[in-house]
Length: 469
Figure 1 (tube, one colour):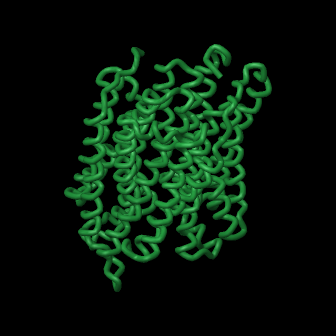
Figure 2 (cartoon, helix red, strand yellow):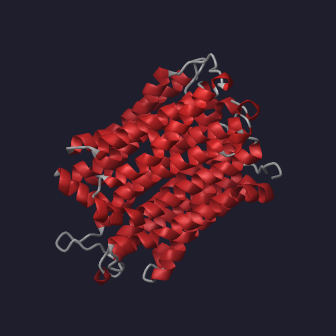
Figure 3 (tube, helix red, strand yellow):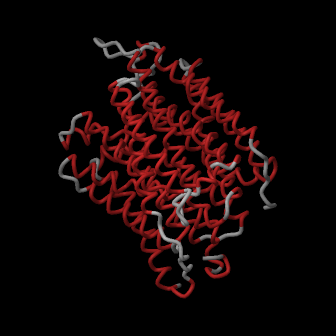
């Protein structure tokens, strides 16, 4: 599929669809956060079971993201987009109708396909649009995701109060159904302009071993806070992950059509972009998850503001607003100062925001400013990382390598969340249940350290400017 074969409407049609789909998926998963207690009550789920709502999503997403990215490199990208939206929508329906926790968890696992939307979108947009427009649309996709993150926390509570928690699923589903119908109609009407699938096949063995390695790694991260990071449970999962990764690398270096070309991941700029993505994911997701816990804490603890579920969302809202504006500015910054310095700007904003959370957390305005900086970091960092990867690898491998970078970012985010809660648990009084400020302070300083790692990685890579807009 090229710009010439799809026609002029591609300049708005597919960017609009992928932006809407990414927005709906991120909004859905974020709105779940404030309504989890109501889901737990209605489905009689234990806290451990409730945690599987997100763990299942993360594990499924880790498997689906590289696979969907590679499918987008091989098959007609619009068909892959339609398939992904349909699977995601089925998962939403299953969760919305779930009579028990088990069905809810199954729906969340199916929704993990939605995590492949971003690399798929990047592959589709770069195939359909001139590079300068594709770069701008990548910023819009990330901006939509960032905006919906904050909006979801604000809307989740009121929607549940007015209609019940199941409407948290039905509303985003309506958007996904419209997106699926539009893609289907375009495929039917434009059959003659289908992008032909190349002769390569999906590396299923590589997909199986990579999936196993990622699942084992995420399980190690997930059980770390419960059993201890040096426990046999964690060590066994890590060992299994290392063995499976080694087998995967062996396979990828020998098959003719690998799931992800390891040699591309080893390229200096791609590898350093991966380091940046890991640091960005670790620091931003840790801060994004811990700040609501912090502001909702009792003021008697020395760190909280006694914020309600609704007002907590407004502390997070600046993250989405600034992230959206930053994402819109990425293409101009990339053209003006290059991708290296744009990524460095993202890393600096992230580091400063985390330091503010660790030092001036008693002032509500400071928390708002810190979240604004972290939102700016996300809005700049994710699209510029994706754009940098696209410029560093062959076009036919862009989606799969972007998918690999997104997996690295999600692993960083998962590790950040789990380590963050480990710090909080260590400083929580067993009798009163109150967490002392030291737990949050330690977590945010570690977050700042990973933000600094992301910043340093950007100065080692080469600097490339986009073409004139």
